[in-house]
Length: 424
Image (cartoon, rainbow, N blue to C red; front, side, top):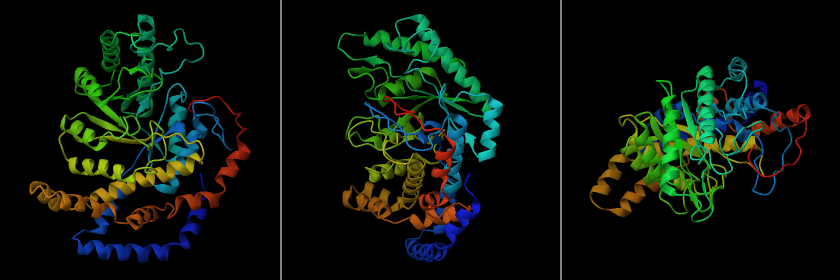
């Protein structure tokens, strides 16, 4: 962790300007009938989970170029995740990926307590083979033609649930790379039936207070067809499995120009929105920093979430899911967590009465203006004040760089050798 004196010193030089900016924004929002302190309280209470794998350098399809201080395992990852929350106050939980993060539950709990974190949803891995694995997932996992391979994938997911129970998690996320690369390679119907049957076995193993999230993705690693390729198929799966099965929306897992915010609305309506993997993309599943390409789309997603707040059964989980190839992973995750908070704060500023009135009057211009007015508001003073009042950093990236944490862990952790493609 970072010495608190470093954060305090960094904040001292910025506190006066922050107070002036916050008060000025408060006056302007007051003229719009908005209580800035109420918005700040909601932002301060909001948290997004960080992915354990996100603190390592990601990889392209062709190569991976590790940076200094790469985490050697889950306990190094938890140290890095703890620093992210210490500086931002926005990432109170971490999502584990098994078997990458498999460890003794007591040791995981002790480390999480030490760095001030809890555990979010568990993530299973049947999209790559592991050492000593009896059956290969080259041609699928939960939908494989071979019953023994499907059983192996089911058992792995049940193992993830067991570990999650021991560390306080309450959800399992399943993403599979199953699909096909050539026409005729698989029978779509039989493959989907096998997937449903195997996933139902995992669902049957859920504890009573757990939820199951299934994740759709249009392509990759399968490039002709994917078993769970879109939100419609994902909804079919959730409805087939039962009341505790929900759809997880990854912002990068859709075709270009798809209206993701409308997908969110439809899943809310069906009471099957389970949660999000936040990231950003330009061409495909780029896994870029959240809000780096299309911050307005992120805002529109949160506009739907704020609009749905209080709906029956509405309780989505929020997590970042990114691959950092050219930036410091800790800095990128901090930046993304703050961008998610920013979109949430902006969505809270939407004048919903005015928006509904414009919608009912079919006044497209005024409806758009109601959204744009909120989106254009610089809510940075709200985010920064929420951090400051928690004892976190007013400027987390600047405080992180001033702390020397990256240089410190680089000296402690052996340098990672450049590797082939793939995520950490």
